[in-house]
Image (cartoon, rainbow, N blue to C red; front, side, top):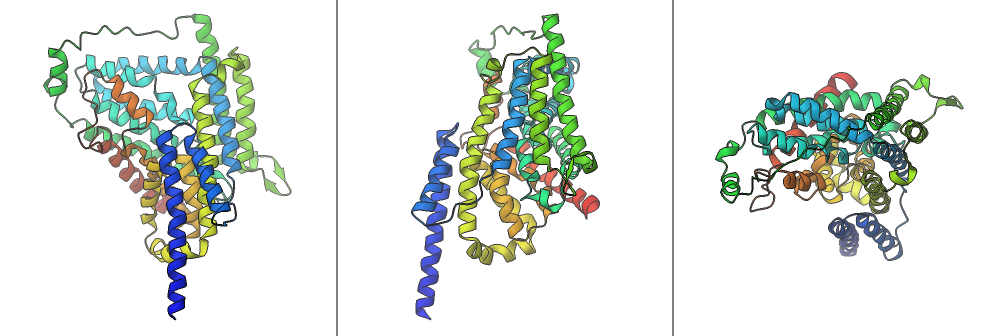
Length: 453
């Protein structure tokens, strides 16, 4: 009996040592940034395999290839001037409704990320939002905080994002009969409601801009006398025409993905089964990339030099290393993990949102979080419908103010109202982040119960 307890303690210590390796590699990779997360994730795989003797887990090839195809199309769109054109249209809309900037700005950034599948498309909008708010004497923190968080919700609603692709992979919810139609049916309305609630609350947060101490200090020191010149990215009519065609081509690709995902009978059938959505997205978006380059008269060399392509490749490398490391750890300790926490998540499946939120803070990637933890949730008995409702929990990286969109928003606010507090976590995005997370999960859960059973 005593020997049995000793063996149990040793096995537990071994699992904890492996978990420590996983967490350490995530921490170091996140600190290094860029492709560091994927590189150190692969170091973790090396340690787990060669030092602990675990069998390598499943490589997330399907998600990686979808990221390549979507990012290729988005990069072509950027090279053709399509993103600049979309920013110009959005800027004109926001300038026509300056007094409602706190409400309209978040919906615009959400729409941008919903269509493009990446949060990096909202960077160009942040300075516009900040300046419109400043000119209307609206505290810029209010629209910027919600708009930045809303971009993340756009990703978890988008039919062409890497996070949605991870869910659609056959080993996750795609194998449980949840496709693009079901995902959008739940995530789109829950996200929009959550954004509205956050914007309404944020509209009353903080002192009016002209009474803010930091803004008053900057006025006294003459820091607010900086001339601001607005660029017109669509000044060339011919260039604008090509950009418009590029945008239409990209939107056509998004529409095709939604159409094939919503109506399986439209897909090619082989051996009596519809072709998987992974293949559909890869084929459609790579084909659309060629169409964008053609109608937008863009150069391939320009597409691969843009920040969209760089960020997409960073995401692919991160998922390659981190998701493989997570899969290796879980599959190697499957029985022990299942025995210790399965009862908890079977009885209270909504609690699985906690590890999703925490891991997303460390991984800085919705797709990596989904690919790493959703197989664990399914194995632990969490219903697929609950995992779908919990999808917004993977947006937890707002918790620490070091994500690029947050850093950019702080930098673009010349008034200083968008800021990081003394204790770091008391920053401008925290309230909007938690409101959108809780509201979107709550509304999503109700919609899943009503619409999916």
